[in-house]
Image (cartoon, rainbow, N blue to C red; front, side, top):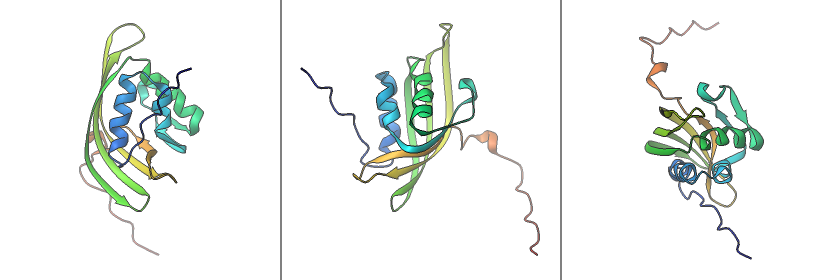
Length: 149
C-alpha cells in the first residue's frame, strides 16, 4: 500500500501563494483547500458566483471552481508585512485555463491576503481577497473625515 505524500506547507507567508499555484497546476482541490485556515474567508470572483466563502466546505467548493479550469497560475508577491503570527501579503496573479464551454479563460488580479501562522509554525490563508488591490478600487480623492463630536 502506497501512501500519498504529505502536502507541502508554507514556511513563510509569501510561500502560500506559490503553493496555491502548484496545487492549481496539479488540479489538487485538497491541496488548495489545505492552504486555508479552517476559519478562513475568501472573496469569490464574480466569474464564480461572487460572495464570500467561509470555512472548509465553502472554500473547498471555491477551490474546485478554479481547479475545474485546468489552470496554470503565475504569481508574484510584491510585499509582506508581518506582525507576530499574522502577515499582510500583496500579490499579483494570473490564472489561465479553459471554461466549461471549452473556451480559453484568463483571470488577472492584484490580491490582498492575510496569512496566519498555525500552531505547527506553518502559514495559511486566513483572509483572501483575490482582487483587493486592483486599480478598480482607486478613487480620485479620499472622502473628507467628518468632524468629531
